[in-house]
Length: 216
Image 1 (cartoon, rainbow, N blue to C red):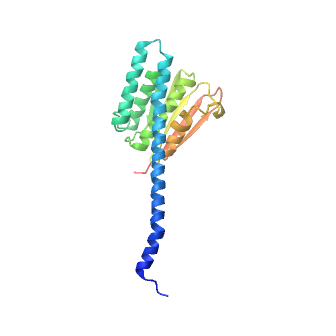
Image 2 (cartoon, helix red, strand yellow):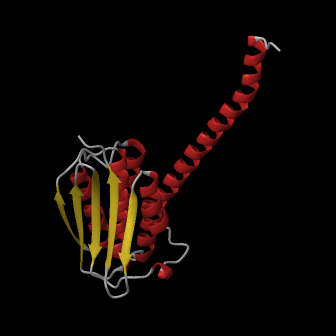
Image 3 (cartoon, one colour):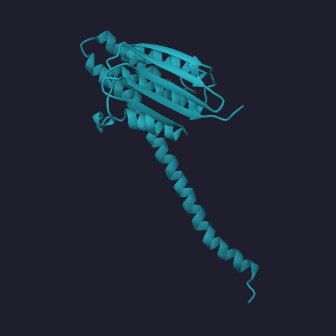
């Protein structure tokens, strides 16, 4: 039997419109969840850690004032800036991140690199993950020095954060500590990369952060 084109088109619309609506709704929900996860990671990275430092140095007003000013700069940079602070390259952004952690925690950080790259959104997320790895090392490793090494290649950018401190196992990390799971591993996944964390008690820790890039 003959089916009129109008009837066929109507039937297709009845099938396609709900499907398109469902796909669009799922995509919107995924974006909303990713944005919420990023906000939670940033709050953990900056605000919660600064509040912990303020508590620790409550009897040192100049130190508390310096921490508050640094936190204000960070929040303004995040809310109103582009990229990581005023940095326009990966190398400058890593140097800024290292300086932030040195200032907050009083630990020495050595930064080295092989190559450099313009700072885009995936690399900004890489820097934020590296900053969290530096902060974790400064707070927990008991090492005198932390090293950061960036390797910029045609197919990928990798950053290594290493310390020779006390080390740990993943089982040692409490469920309430979101630095490894959210601010490093999940952040790198959202940015299209991955994080590999290698550590053992007494053997220090290495965090490898990698973002693939298009060959130019």
